[in-house]
Length: 77
Image 1 (cartoon, rainbow, N blue to C red):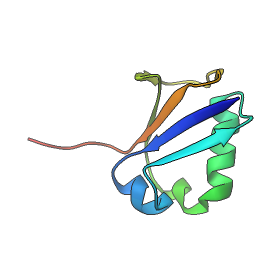
Image 2 (image 1 turned 180 degrees about the vertical axis):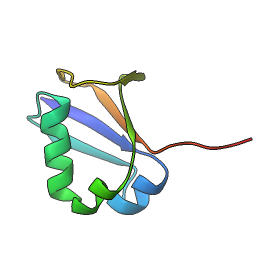
Image 3 (image 1 turned 90 degrees about the horizontal axis):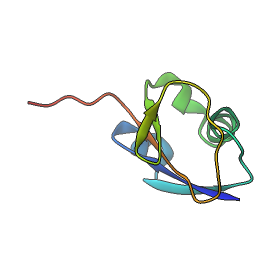
């Protein structure tokens, strides 16, 4: 199983990428653990998570081909 993770805003600087694929993750909590292992400094940033373009507030089960986005707070005018 492979999921695609997109990083936005300051998180692209933290991760040095805007996209990364992860194999064998079955939930958001498992994915967050893997991302924190790869990029420990990400714990210092606030962000929201979406799965297939829908913001989630809790842990979610992931499926093969899901697209997950890590998005910091946005501001604009």
